[in-house]
Image (cartoon, rainbow, N blue to C red; front, side, top):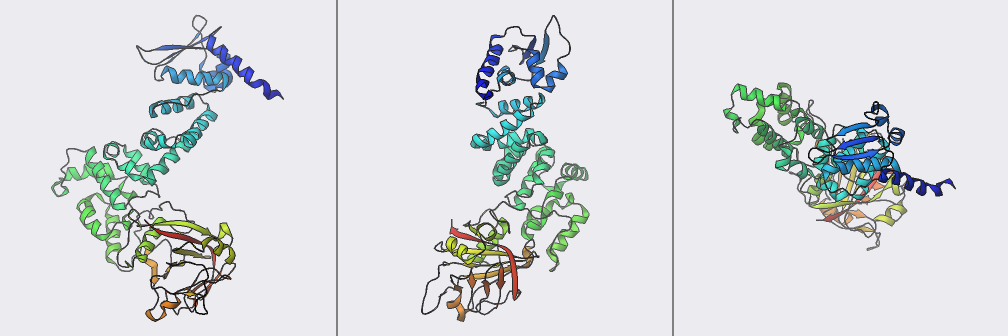
Length: 465
């Protein structure tokens, strides 16, 4: 009942601000020669803001005088109006104005408004934020107050790294900003690309250093070490191929800590070395899976094209992998699986074995709809495969098997009472309620357990780009 009077009350307060009657605060906003005075009432400002309550202490000639030369008058008037009637104009034209609005609102300790402005921008100005993501992030990355906008901009930049590595932008960034970004696990860029841009940035900070590292003096080496010493440990060297390392990293090896250099050599030269101890874990690119990362999809794409000796990378995957089904989300039943996945064409199945890091699955280039053919439900193909990663975090543990030549007529089995089945011997068989089994016959053995449970599995539609 009382709320019906709020608009009238707010309108009265806004008129008080507009008419400038009986004011006792003068705020001088902007820089000479464009200083403008904004008139307000201390009782309103102190009621709404702890900042003004703490800073409105002494009057001069009966007025509080405030100078805010760093704030444009239109932005300051916008905020003061909000303190009277709760109205805020967010139709600002430039990223600089929005940043000034945010920082001033935060300075005035209007925490609810700070959060609202961020939410409004994210919900209503997505394209504007994307076009100015680097500018926003550069100004707010160190502030937890702007966490919503900071994380949103960071997600955009990690998903679209060309925004970050645009030459005129990246080379001017502070080392603190670059360190903050390189710590992120989901940058969708080749690691060698990140390394190359880091070297370009280091040269830009030291333009007198010779571009040929073989000509560096000891002093040059020390200067470049100081420039990069906090950033080089953020490179995931295990995700740089040995060819790229030799061609693009090795010339700058003097910049690497001695221990790290030894571990990298061991990783490249020792057959059973699986990781670089001093290197951070591989980045996890964003993808619509709770089981795997985008790098797994790059490997699947290579297997689909039977490129078993060299893999695609995350930036040149020639397929889209669209999530159709997740057992934990859609129901872990055969009926749910077939209802969602039948008639969808090529799919890949990925399951995680319970209480382990092992993932298993298979690729079906045909379809899962059960179709009776010569008194059975088998579907022939030589392009399907089953796979396993003994450790989903270690890509060197991957194994794949295609159908044997004399067994290709049994590659896929569509049965309405079960989930996905690969092979005549039920080489990989999803039963019900999370139970799976493996009995190699159509495919070669990839060392799967005979019977196991999967706590979740996913099916992705595979579409050629």
